Amino acid sequence: MLTLSPGARFCIGLAITLAIGISSGAVVLTNAIPADLIKPVTAWAGIIAFLGSAAQTGLQGLGMTTANKVAAAASDPNIKQIVTTTEIANSPTFAPVDKVVSK
Image 1 (tube, helix red, strand yellow):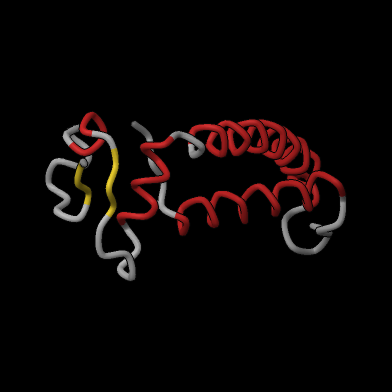
Image 2 (tube, helix red, strand yellow):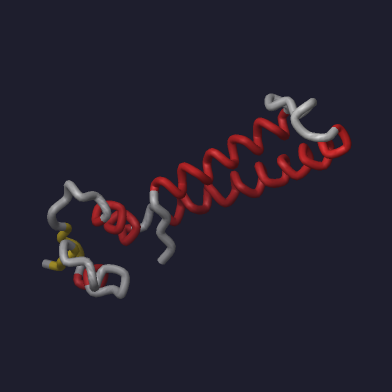
């Protein structure tokens, strides 16, 4: 099961936003990098923006599973106990986590 922390998802989002800004021309690269690198950097930023956006959409979809919701709740120090199904509570992901229990 793939889980990413909110911080990691935030960093991925920032990188994609930067790539979108560069590829759309909102971030001006003139005098920031050598002139002969502007076109290739802009082109690669467009590719990264497209692929990153697709990957981020996929990560959001993976985050909608019950197990990922339990993992997100288990990482919150304000939550004391999570009651879930036996299958999820006994999975290798949650076996060492004391606050994830089954009915």
